[in-house]
Image (cartoon, rainbow, N blue to C red; front, side, top):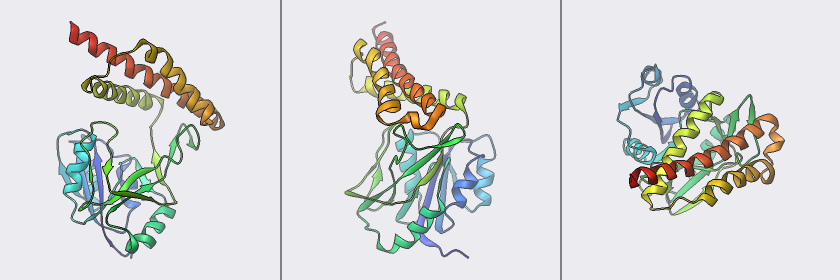
Length: 253
């Protein structure tokens, strides 16, 4: 039987029946499992409950707000925050258990992330190592309230060697829907910050993003998936600025 550590695994969910079991089972040493669910209509809650999670239903507060709410529910000071489509690699699970006793309570720990998309692990184009700050002590650190690009505010950072595994999109349609959603949130953030629409950014930022992803960061080494990812990244940037234009136009009218 796996020895439990004074650690809470915290996950936010919405219709994650395909992922939640893999996520929870990758952290068998967590003393506490908290799942905050935004009223899923599939079997997410049923599966999480059977695996020993405390499941709380909560309406959506934005990414930062939802993760902060979930962290408040953790019974342990040390929190491991994973998305439902993520799981610890066996190597990271072992590394975390070995290092746990010597963790610094004032530090936040960066975990490298490796993502799977379009039938392969993506290792270029800016997708790896993709460090994510996911391990922290909630007495000293907490999520900010950002609706997008949320992060944990910590005094200092350290990192682990082995990765979180991430099944980022189910398919291309899921990628398109996600890019549409995130570009809307990004445009709204720019609008709230009083950033003005620029034709130059609309024209040149997407092209620059493609060059960065596909050429500079060697996305071409990931074959056709790397090309598709670079095009998707560029289009997401285009949508962000086009939607900012739309928001400004709506306000004027």
